[in-house]
Length: 304
Image 1 (cartoon, helix red, strand yellow):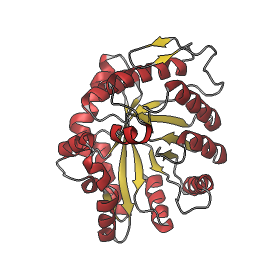
Image 2 (cartoon, rainbow, N blue to C red):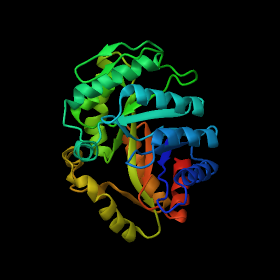
Image 3 (cartoon, helix red, strand yellow):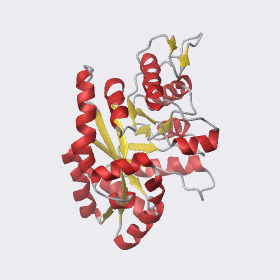
Image 4 (cartoon, rainbow, N blue to C red):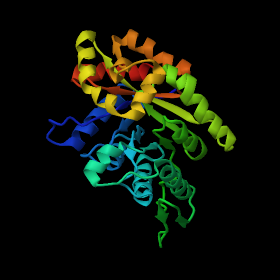
């Protein structure tokens, strides 16, 4: 099991890229082997992953995740290959359907057939990853570049899908290398996510998928304050039906209930439950970001 961390540039930093590189370098020095970046509406995380990979050689970098709806797969494939070339084989591409309500507001994108789009998107990415020419015409996407889309040194790269619903998990099992979950607890992983994607991969003749669990974590001597912060920072996810369904599978009512909080020993004990449930890898997602908290988190990630 590889345990990585999510890095978010400090919004108060004078330079977001410099701050991310500094955090990645510090984490690597503490023994962290993989860092992940989450796409929002500010920093482009595919670019950031490439920059960090060049600045901290040997450190694994990945996106967790890049929403696919506003981005054509040819553009994502180009950026992913560039990041992989910069990382010399240590880059992982995590993609997801994203939150359609947010995307409608930001980009004016109408709701569509998301599962069909995901299947077609992965088909294009896989063709490029395998070094083939792309000539794809689907219901949702067309990809027919007149020149080769392959970046020397940029292939192959693993593809993970933020899939937690049954249809998305089946597509991920058939066409991706695994799933990268967020706010899916051990019960949901063991009873639903792992068996669904594993069976889909087996049916498609694919290798067993990786199940990467991204978990909100606070390593702290003040758990009460951390729980209060989790209630505030994670409340955002409670409004989305897709998360409501996965929380219901876990038997909780709020995303904050899945936050792993405590001192190092307590946090490690709770995180080991994910391994027992079938998670192959972990991503520790901090919601407390003071330097002392982050250093403790890095130490836990290095130990697991």
